[in-house]
Image 1: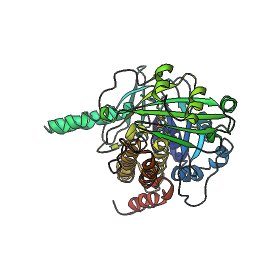
Image 2 (image 1 turned 120 degrees about the vertical axis):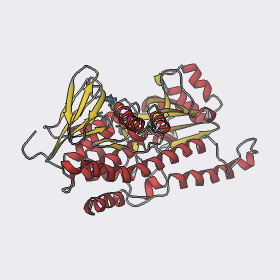
Image 3 (image 1 turned 135 degrees about the vertical axis):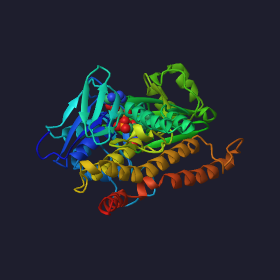
Length: 428
Ligand SMILES: Cc1cc2nc3c(=O)[nH]c(=O)nc-3n(C[C@H](O)[C@H](O)[C@H](O)COP(=O)(O)OP(=O)(O)OC[C@H]3O[C@@H](n4cnc5c(N)ncnc54)[C@H](O)[C@@H]3O)c2cc1C
């Protein structure tokens, strides 16, 4: 450990959340950072990702804006605009990941092929990390950014369940242990990238060349938008069985979709959709799983963030955005001059206090959007709708889901940063 180092942070997982945490921590030269990633190389999946203004504020604060703007045709809006279409910055995931990697200081080591199995922590002592290859490492703070199936979350909740058991709180221990496994949302996503030229040959004036577009239907919806400066169209189609929410999904969670089965799901949809479907090759099916609302994102000197803490449905395009917000608030509390080795747990509890309610609210709002987009809305009956009633009903639905979603483009992260700083500076 360097002589001016106040503590060593290990980040488990080099996805959007882990890499943003590393970039944000690099503002504080007295914090040492190491990253452990299970994959044998850093490669994001070839798909799109959209960011709303709140995480974009973080991108600007971390001086990533200029680099990222080179990789997109979308432009940041100034001031609130009353529609999601004009507020979403869209990227190809590998471009986004590369921009983060370019910003990491050379002193930060990324260890690939290091799959964390579990950790152990003793009060006041360093945290021991055990990897599946049998090797070990140690750190003062562990950040679990290891996604939906997080090993850090498993270890953290097992630790809390054991504490509850040791006090004979058996039912509390069982409730905590039940939070470890993610739950199926009842929805599957079918993802593909469509080369823009292929779609142009099929329909030269297709709407998605100009704007992100959503097509809504009963128990399904489709979203498509251009990425890679218009060379590719990101395509995601969703099919929902809401009554199966929270049941167990028995097939592999991610895998190739059966093309005929996939096409049959949307066969009666409008001509614009058929043009897109004709251009989809080898779609991937993702069974969308979420993390059940946790009672805490921290335990002692360990914190989880992003999908590890609050994996949500993608219906508000906000999972990565919330991981970016977590990363920024976490690094703000760790980097603050008042945070020392002795006060790490307090700093992490402030992170939990600020981020958990917000992220869990986003999780619930996203779940609701998944119902609205598939024409399941308590206030509006879409069963047996006469032709002339459809448009007015859809307009009301549009108001309902916009209201549920507008936090993403009308609110700012600034208040959370101020609140975190105020709590750190108030007496402990
Ligand atoms: C169809 C779909 C569309 C989406 N669209 C959007 C969108 O438009 N906008 C948006 O904001 N979000 C979107 N999301 C959500 C977004 O992709 C996730 O919320 C985001 O990637 C989470 O980032 P993360 O860093 O927390 O986790 P991940 O990106 O999953 O990264 C976790 C990393 O940890 C590594 N890892 C896993 N286990 C271990 C271990 N035991 N040890 C070490 N390393 C480990 C993994 O290899 C991975 O690199 C979408 C999701 C889906 C499914």
